[in-house]
Image (cartoon, rainbow, N blue to C red; front, side, top):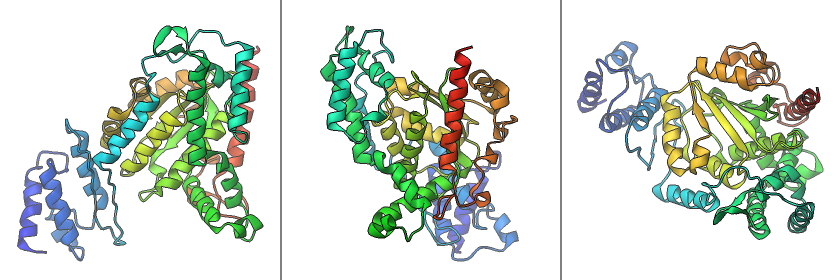
Length: 420
């Protein structure tokens, strides 16, 4: 390592003697990253400690440093480029261009023109009108039209018209909104996701696997994204909304963005299909401790899916604890979100989150999971991948079918409690 490199590292170190151990400017991060990339072999331990203990090597440190700056900036950088070698000489390339952001903003804005309209309407929708809507959906999307429940269709049709909130949406406008959802699902391949799970859970010698190697590869990638157990449904709220749990610490550092989005679509659809009669939305609770470095392209794709494929499905998202990485994520996504959606995100510390969960969850404090300091052991059903066994003859370890069975039983329990 050259003397110039050494001076650069020491400059960064001196500026942080009273800080939190992170470089405090974009320039310092640039110097640190440049030095790190130029380093061919790790320094001896003692020498490393004299050079800001960065070079053992410590890729997580550099990412946290970068993200802490972005998260605390009044104008977060749009073009995010983080390229650093790790021990395996792989690279992270978490890049999103200004053009991609603008495109996402345009797509989201197109679907969010009703953002100022109340989320639910009181206008009547007759049985005849419902029959007309269902018939048109069945005609246009014969293989997927049953995905939309009568309760959800009615909730869309009964809303006030954005151009005149004193009247109900015209049927043509309702059909346009629902058609957009179904077209998005068709383009995203949503109707076939569960078929991929069956394919991944079977042997590679199965006829379906041998006939379509590309589909098998897609199925196996989906299984890999499911297997870490970072996303699953478990239980309901007191209002009958299914709860989607996110375990951020289990998310991969090097995600397959397409497969991760496919997993989200699969899991979201599974929960929606298990909703009790009359329920149309769900709750998300995220254990946001120790998240991996964010991948902006994945986050933007998730936001587009939420707005275009699952409008008015999210009731609320609770995230705890709050970290610099979570702040970075929100700084990136909030400017893209419709106002009503942005208001559904709640960031809390662990203690406040527990109090909220106690009020929300069907069995109160008994439903709070162990990773939030409660008694409910989710790991008994959704362990880390290293403790999971293959479900079938393929590569699927995540208990997808058990999750659905448990969710259906919980739905029945909630419905029975409403009759008492």
